[in-house]
Length: 395
Image 1 (spheres, rainbow, N blue to C red):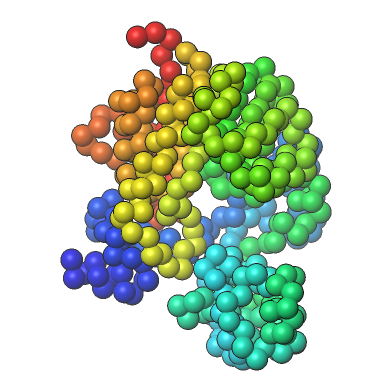
Image 2 (image 1 turned 60 degrees about the vertical axis):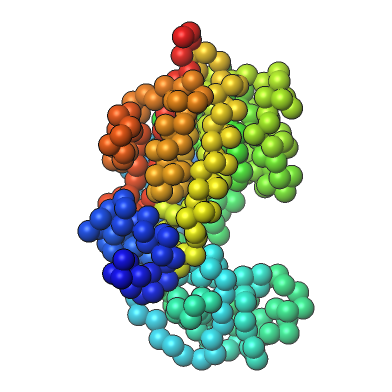
């Protein structure tokens, strides 16, 4: 226990999270923490073959001097190497940014005004050191706004990053992104849509569709020749998803503002051939992660929340249909335990997955766990979980 408390203090991960990692990885727990605190070695994005070919996209990006490679198993998956770590000097005034901004800045993203927590006395044009709210240094930069401007407007580019610990191309600033030729997306997220295996002419339901990455991938895989329904209870998120759908030229999408946990009651006419369940989760597999304060109780509450989405998907999918459950986390509560709930309480049966690029799931007391697919931070560059179910035609 003392050793785990030392890891918790050293890496600024809650003791509950460190216990989770130790339960999962035993002697490799510290290696998993180190992996979580660093970006993956590859920055993945999806070539949108509704608007371009993979080879044409690679040629366009290559002409800009961006190093790009195809993945050998997922044809639309493309990646560019993430360089680093580089040394960051503490020089100039410190600008404190919130957690998610700091984790983006660590990889070279610029700082926009809403992400700033403290910038006392900041002057336009000043050299600064960017730190998170634990004081961990992530980058150097140049102030493009003063303290008064940041506090008055709360929008716009506040600090231009000039030297970050890790570096990846800013693909969201390219013309290819603006034209909808690519979509930044992790490899496991792309594997998820491939495991769902949507077919032209089918009705596909994404019960928690924002921000639209997997939703638009489903459209791409069906070549806009099916009915794709996306659901989210937040109007703003649906609006953001619609922008992504439009930019990527997905034409077979209907978006619904609704709490998907009650979809069978609020929209009883909806049935689907395949359902994707990618609910809110603890996000403990997302990298890089500079610190994490999550509690065991929060993890357990999220697992119960996720089960509600899986249960409604099991009602909406037709007999013989497919349900895929995915989360960007690594806790057994949110992964194998929810998969087991799908079998024992939702009338679903786990199936083998294709493609299978991760590792088999855990839990010696649950035989079917080996049919699920895990991605581990220290092995695969991030944490993720995928389970594929079939709804039996009859009992």
